[in-house]
Image (tube, rainbow, N blue to C red; front, side):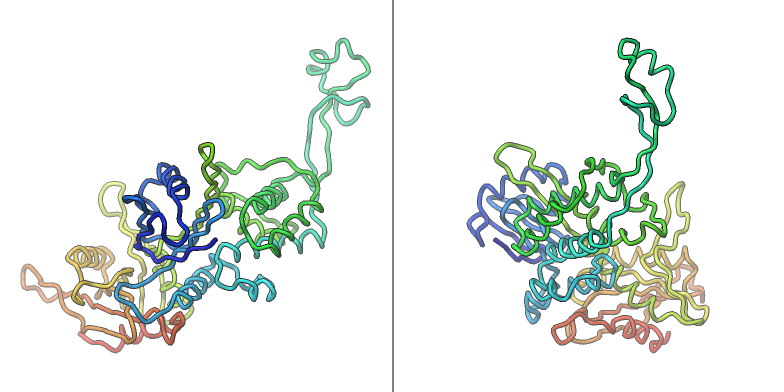
Length: 407
């Protein structure tokens, strides 16, 4: 069963097949994540600014982005827009997915991730999984490798026919294969479509026996890929993301939880950066999360720093609609601090809009001493959706808004 909701929507027991058992599972999971993804309300949950998919037992809740007061875009349009944003931000490698899988369920984010993993793993199995050399220790009936005299005296004083040695072994039991096997096992416990489940079961039958991986403190950046293991990268990236976000049931009778959710504030920021970065030229430079010391060990990191012909602009992205088309005082204070600290001439508060561009002229901040080193703030609202699809020209539109307005 699948439920589709929007961010900041409330889902109550009895709606869309959402039961008290599902609510109890979300309450248990809520103790781990606090109010990170959603908050608990009377006989329901209220989703926050995280979008993606939340799976509880036999139910999948897809949480979509939606701008306040936007009544024109359909759920299907927002589903496709979210997938496109994840793809452009390199969080979903849809290009590696077979055309058959895309046609099967093009709007199911969770199944896209599992589909990518299974397609990549199937290709690896067909090509032949890699073996690696490892050093092991143990009791053997034949002398193999290097005899460990201390262990031999302690363990084999009576059993003279055994040899405690250290030796090399060449097998499939290495970390990358362990991750793939663990995700295959996970797949069989998820209520996915029959095509995916059949593929996972078939790959499990073909997979060599390996040990379970220890992924508790494992991060993707800590994995080293050589030229030999590079073909594993896409499958391991998708697989490790699924494993790290899987939470087995904490109590008897409750549901396992798989939370594949993304902060919409960060996703919008990353999307704007990606659309600007592709427009770089010798005279246009784009920087992400540039850092400057501010106080003690604390640093300021504006979302995006844009330089055009040597003139610096601060872009502060905001995933919200400004009240009354006016920025909040907190937003103004924040961009003012960024401008001062990074020696920029202008700050741009960038908000998502609806059907048209809404750009104000740059307005100077008031100088306390009446000086002439004015710095400016500009409000820009650009439509995230265009003709029912994700606005792919938002980077060009932002550059136009910046360069065509004058102080």
